Image (cartoon, rainbow, N blue to C red; front, side):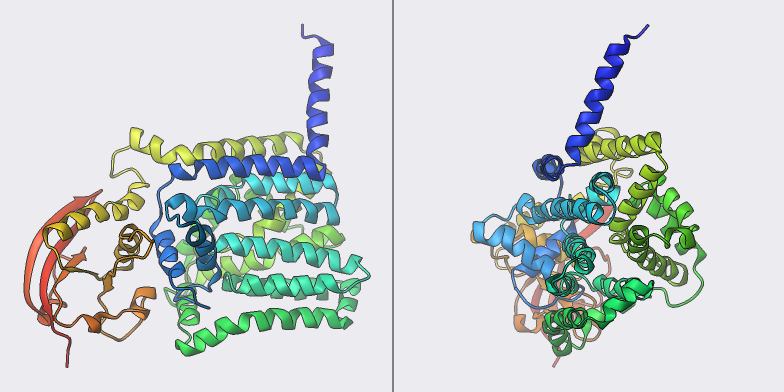
Length: 496
């Protein structure tokens, strides 16, 4: 028989740990340890071609870029340029840091609206979510979006409780930075007004001038990106609209069901199932102040993403900010219902996935063939660099040319001079529709008379051939299941 004293001591240890984590210092230490481990694991992960593209943006600081507002590029500049460090570790560095700080604000948000227990559990849920684990490993616009969304939520929760109007100004400031991170932040404004209109107590806040000043602050902060878009034919807005309605507007049951299925991976299978179930109790949950707040910032974004998925298509991460308050909502409800086994199962499941994730490139390489290994899709683009370098050494004086963003981004990243400046790699763009950042900034016509090394996945180069005096195939390579072709194109002759 087990010793009752040992059981009592074990329960006491668990209880003391749980109580320690509920303190601001204890929770901050937990986040610090997890974030430090995620930072330490960054060297295990390859650079993704989107990250390489954002790095090339960071070499030319501006108020906007083809597909995103500017902050992701600014962040990469901050973690690379001042230190003269350009390795994948430094490119990615701001992602785990921002997710870690966001988690601390989630703890304080839950503590303000519900209790420290809810803030602690909601923070742990968010810290270990699959989307947080993935987002901490790759720098993207979602990292600053989640950070500014979370700080804006905290300020919004504090504003009605304070005698001063400063919190409303913080909401506007954070919303402005959020819009400069990703246009999804516009949904924050919609959710805020849904919240302010949802109850008599909140409706009274609309009479406060500070609410509208906060809105003006956000609009003024967004103005530089709007001006940049005006100067570039609103290319970012056009891309966002095309991305949202990429397949036109029609009933897309397959896309909708795929998106819903993906959310079981993004939010975790247990938590997303619980969110769907409790979403049916909308009227009951909306009667309580805290849960009404959480619902207003969870369901609208998730609902819009689901609608887009069913009428056109949606990417799995589009609803990511909804799971900030989604984590707190389920923490509130699971603690209320005393569902300890469910809570423990979620934490263990997500914790194991979080620990294993940085090692998946190594594990996949050891246990899967190239065709089965999903990480080879990332390595494929990076493997182009040494081949291209070898050919350029054999054929000195050639200017690298390519027809694809997925090729030019990693090549630009890997072909760096000692000061970090990328060697010129030209995008094939003869005018017409702009498809990416490199089309927008192509200076192909400036290379009249030059000989070029053309890297492509297309075996047929009839589009390019008429503009060169001579074309010679130098090499073709099968790289992780994909064939690439390398041509020497002599004497570029632009159209007159």
